[in-house]
Structures are given as C-alpha cells and as structure tokens.
Image (cartoon, rainbow, N blue to C red; front, side):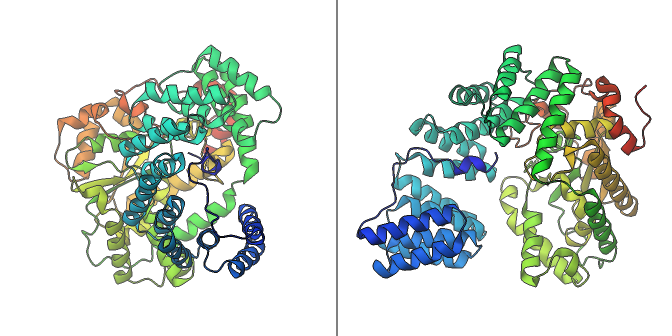
Length: 537
C-alpha cells in the first residue's frame, strides 16, 4: 500500500496531552508541530527548545522532538526522548506507538511489536494504534494477525480509508477475495476516485472488472481536481478493465497515459542503470571464494523480471513440507545497507575491500535476520525479483543458496510489467523502450552468472512449466535439493499468504491462455524493436 495512506488521520481517541502548558508554551508546541509536518527542522527545533524552556521536560515536547530525530535518522536520540516521555506518562498510547516505529528502524522488531500492542492495550477505542499495528504486521508478513488488527481499526473508524484499503490488501493476500472486493468497494462508496481501491480491485487479476466499473472509472477520471496518485492508479485500472473486455486500443492508451504521468514524478535513467549493473557485475567477478560453500543452504532465492512467474515458482516451492514461502524480503538489502553505513561508503566503493570473512559475516547476519521464516520449516524462499543484480554477491555471501531465475517470454513479461503500477520510483516499466533496456541488462548479466555457476543458478522458464509441469517441477525440486512431493503439483491448494500482485493467479491451476501481447499489434513495436524482435506482422 502506498505510504501516503498512513498520513491520513482518522478520528482520534487519544489526543496529545497538553497538561501543564502555559498559553505561550502551547503556542510554541503547536508551531513546532506545524514545522515538523512541513519538514522544516530548524524552525521546529527552535520552537521545541522554547517550549522546553517554558515547560522543562514536558513529555509532549519531548515526543515531538523524538519525531524530529526520527525523520533525521537519529534513532538513538529519538528513543531516548520517548523513554523520557514514558517515564512521565507510562499510559500514553501515542508515545508507545512512536516508540515502536523507532525500534523498528533500529531493527528490533520484537520490541517494536510489543510497543505497538501496548499502544492498543492502552487505547483500545482509538483506531490509529490498531491501524499502526495492522500495517506493520502486514508488512512483516503476519497477514492473519494484520487482518484482525485492521478489522478493529475499521470497526472503530468506519470512514477511515487507509484502514479499509489495507484491510482489503490483507484479505487479498490471505486469498479471501470476496471480502477484499467488498472492502475496496466500501472505500469507493466513500470516495469514488480512491485510486488505492481501484488498484486493489485491478490487482485481483483473475476477477474481471465490469462495464459498470469501466463507466465509473471513466467518469471519475473526467472529474477536475483528482489527485495525481489517484488518477494514475485509476488509469492502470482502466487499462485492466479495457483489456478484460478486449478493448485493446483503449487499454493501451489508458496505460500509456498512466505510465507517462508516473514517469514524470521521477524518470528512470536507463544509461545510469546500465553503468551501475555493469560495474556491479565486474566487481562481483573479483570476489574471493567463500570460506563455507554451504552457507545459506536454508534459503532459496527467486529472482528475475517482475510478472515473469516468480510468485508461481515460489508457490510451488512453498507447497513443499520443507519450505516456507516468505515472499519479497528486504533483509538482503538491509544487510548490505548496514555494511555500507558502517563503512560510510556505498556498496560499489567497498565491495573490493571485503574479504571472505566479511562476506561470511554478512551471510550469517542475513540468516539471523530471516530466522523467523524458518521457525516451522527448515528452509525459506526469498522472492525479490530485483535481487538478480546481486547474483554475484550472493555467491560470496550465501554460496549454498540456490538461485532460481524466473524467465518468461520477454515480450509478454515486458508488456505485463507495463500494465502493472509499481510504487517504488524510479521504475523501469514506465516506457516500452526502458523495459527493453532493462530486459537486455538482466538477461545478459544473469546469463553470464548462470554460465559461470550452473550448480548455483537455474534458469526456470515459465513456458516450459506450462508445457510439461510435472517434469519441470521435479527438476526444480531436484535443483533445490528437495525430495519430490506431490503437493507441489497441486500448489494452488497451498494455504499460505501471498503478498504480491499475483496473489489471485497462483491460487488457480496452470493456465495456458495468459499471452496478451499479440492483441496489441504494432502498438508494441517499440518494445519488440528494443528486444531485437521483428515488428508485428
């Protein structure tokens, strides 16, 4: 869910405390709050210092100081301020909620969830603590608990759109599609131009939108004053409904407009990415051989282009009794980020300095951070498609981890990326030419790594799975050193939460009618040209 939802506030049951403040101190506190909201650190600091001169150690001023520190990435100072607040006001739910956010930023998730739950216990009739708890449970992969918390938030504030939307998302991830549909449509009843609700409905790929939906989308998009984020999301949804109804030219133009507007926010720089990818490939080839070649055997990485079957391959593996499907994890990025912060330089500036013992230390740190995914099963998947860039690094850091490269026909995969709204910007999928450039970099680099380390990297082709599913599933399991299990053939029956845009698709048996690019003819010629394919006939 886009982070903008979290900035909207529902009716609150726990207003900030202003006990003991004089009118002058209250005025300064309010000025500080406005400055923090506007991102003006210097004026906020002046106003808070003045407040604390007038009311020494006032907890609410200290709490706002903690927010200021948090936004400036000063987590130690933020935590110290909140501990002072809670020493004075131990029953202040908002401060406990803030403390959870600081503890999360420091990597202490157990303490963070304890703080968020304490906030709910102290203010059970306030929706925001429940929403914060549910949002973080959802991002942490605990979907069932997230649903409970978000249902509570919605019950306490029925018109709070972010709770409705995130509850819909969580229900999709749990495979409860009818309930999710109802939540998204309840959001649209409150706000017909709610882009997040339309995004949620469109992302249930196996459920076609209706004529009424198309008409409602068209009417909403014609309204003046629609927020850009809503307009973009509705544009992608309109593209989806038009494709469902075989209105292909209309679908293309709706998606073209949405992508153009999305790209204006922060353009992708294909040449800069190419240079970065080449530099990372070259540096990774110089890495030292690992000390422990089996380190990381507990993990199965799945990489590749988005929309190429990676969630399907994960679902197949997660149906195995020895494998937990963990979806798109950020711990690999976190470990490398921690090391970059420790060395005070980006990865490409320290990668040549790291020895085999450093990479082993980083691999063990990754296994420590992901241990929760192996509480019930000995192995887990890590399915973040963009990790293909780090395929060489993984060979030094977690050399025992098999890497599955999910491959799909490049034209189909590229077009599918163009139809999907991605929220992490800049993103390569906003123009057909950028998609082609990204595909070329990806296929060249992963092809080089697979040729160099075929025992560690397997190219798993989506079309081969469609053609001979049992043979491919047996080969996939064997590559991962897993015994064959018939449950993997019935992967769509696996009861697990799926936190990607393919959540609905992977709960169905294999379909062989998923190709769509041919319907668009010459409209996709820029993509064909970039991929080295002949123009449409």
